[in-house]
Length: 474
Image 1 (cartoon, helix red, strand yellow):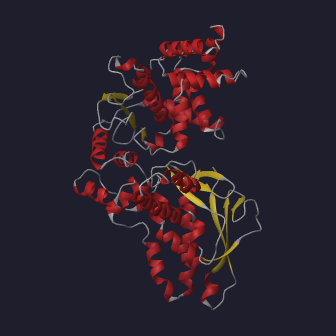
Image 2 (cartoon, rainbow, N blue to C red; image 1 turned 135 degrees about the vertical axis):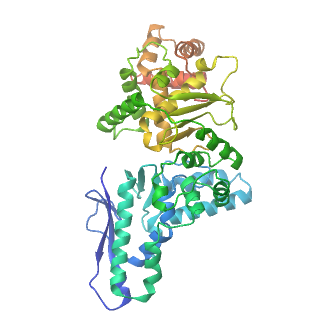
């Protein structure tokens, strides 16, 4: 990925404080200027650099540590958080709306860099939002991904550059700011834990006091995001405190296992996707990864996949357990101290007690979903699907959903079988055919209908309206 750079052009030196802090700013990714005007290398913004350094100092912790949105919305880009929230505010209690609006406003102040420049209005936005090992960079016209390390390096570099310039001016008014910038990685351990795990500060303090979680000692330690229990807390942070504790305890119970076959498969899949599908949409990456894995595991197209056996043979332990809340469908963990392991919740509403668990269609689909996370999202170590308000980025979940469906029932197989069945087109016949796909491949009706639609679309056959009637909740 290309690197981020804040380009600061200093004005000629002058004894007046205003001229000391005056500079021109533009932002680039690689060789392209993206802000203040995308693609305009000769356009920049005259700023007072102490505004930018004050912003970086004040919001360093959320910029580096926050990986979730502050309310129960999951937009695919940070600029859409407010509009997504407003859809729910009309029917929400006034107290909820007021609290959420304050959280959204605080989020906007922290993550839209353009808001830090005093005296400017209606500047084009420049959003920065961390997602795992990446940073989303959104401007008015585009959304880009860069590595988190590149983003952190760029933010440190521009802050250090401004700090050095102000320090050389020997002006007392900036001494507190310079001291605060140098101490940006320090902080109360409970507060650092709250940012890293998306917890209320009181909850984070309670977990520290009770020994449930070990707090990070610095922003940089927290930013490494290598503690499975903190990540578990972040994935479950929308839940009540006691349920977060339970999920942390579950993850803590997953022993560390050797998993060389999974390591090797994951490395091969990630290399394949990075080389050939890096610019494709998430669902395309998921389907490509699934077909690659099927080939590596020598799976025949028209056979039902033993997904439990496949992941266990790769070194993953699978744990069917009854846990609260019932809305937790599945959980996967991988890290230096725990896993690789997958929890499948027997209490989840989709699981039918009358069916042997390893043959349960929902369990199979959820396990395949988590399998994708284990091979493609290894750096995140822990993922959660349907933990009330999921904390995983939308594109990660979209990719895993696509992987699960394609791994269990390839689109081209569904389409071929439809043609072999004399191309049923009536609602009754199509419903019977989709139900047969469910039985033969061990998938849910939603997945079967979705994969059939995808396969037929490749043949320019559109049965979407009928399939929506067959599987209305897909």
